[in-house]
Image (cartoon, rainbow, N blue to C red):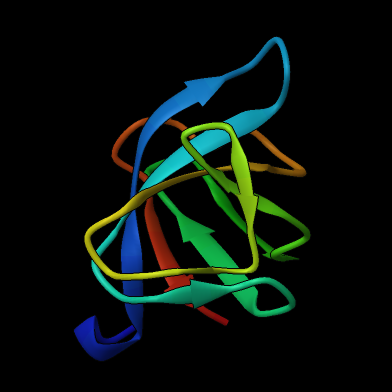
Length: 83
């Protein structure tokens, strides 16, 4: 994966509710397919819904932190790319 496809990095993962917080380096929209890559993690999923400070958003700009449900465990430091 190239750096131009990099969307961001997981800063927190809440296993009890299956939510990852992603610090965005590029913008992200609902409906896009993304790929999580880490030391022990690799999976793809569609962005279903996102929240910024507990408010639902359809698009998030670079520089923001978004929370989203993830289908698998996404540990801190995991990179997120466009799929």
